[in-house]
Amino acid sequence: MQQKQEENNLMKTRTSKSAGSSSGHAAHASGRQLTDHEEIRSWAEERRATPSCVKKTGGKGDVGMIRLDFPGYSGEESLQEISWEQWFEKFDENSLALIVQDTTSEGQKSNFNKLVKRTAEEQKLRTRKAG
Image (spheres, rainbow, N blue to C red):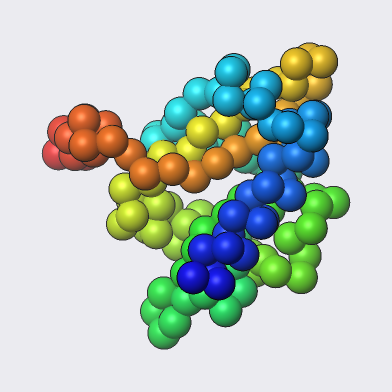
């Protein structure tokens, strides 16, 4: 339970700082959902984000909760860098999608991102592409 609350607090911090507004509503209006590994990696690297996990959420052989860490944000104390391979393994294992915003309402490059569960239809499409 505390882990989920910590996850929500981290996302709120990132959303308000990176979306360019205190409410974060603009981020959802122009957001798009990504599941393709290369698209996600490209979007993150354009913003100098690194694949990371939340410290103390994993166990032996498990990285725990994954995140993207952006330079200059609050992740320094709570996040630990991991490889893209580890990040995508957890991403696929949990059937996640990444909602991103490319630009803020002011036209600035946005760091807004949110990990969400894929719908059953999206999971079927992803499985067909992989096979």
